[in-house]
Image (tube, rainbow, N blue to C red; front, side):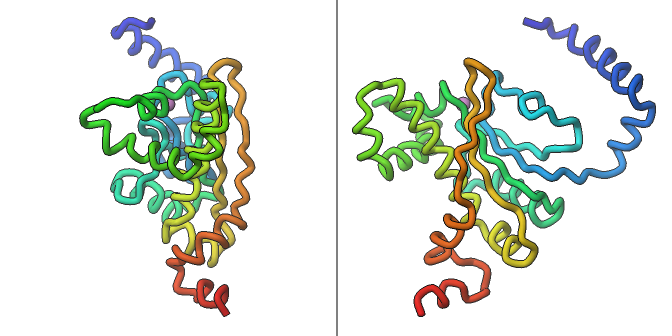
Length: 220
Ligand code: CO
């Protein structure tokens, strides 16, 4: 593990490396940001966001919390989505879960987790929504992995439910929303291939916030 003081030495080396390839690197960065991607992932230290995607500074707007959740009353994640969509005009929003997620595992324990209860309750809700599928998986580890995937999928749906995403997509044709799962054991990203158009159409039967009358059209 890196000693605390070493971090400032690392920082100096990093600055030198960046300037060696582009003398103006930091001046350019300080000017503005125009990332194409918003990434919503888990806080887990083993998932280094930019590194796993091979993206540089300035290329991805990032939000991380325990178990990559998108609760509709969380002002933090809702502000990030709103800013990324309305002001940065990101083209893609990625919710990235990961196997062996401690948050997902904690949520499945039959015990009082104190302040974590209301947060992790969101994951229990995902389990309840998919209880038949999950309970049919006999291997405990496989069931846990599947819950990680289903949680990621449900958080994508929560992103699509937001007014910012719906209105931007109707007006401009972006962003689209993607669900990924990162595998700690081999570094691979798995695309859950969320059917963005399909989910949007389905949720707008109830959650249409565009004012475009899509909900009415659907019931005609
Ligand atoms: Co995690």
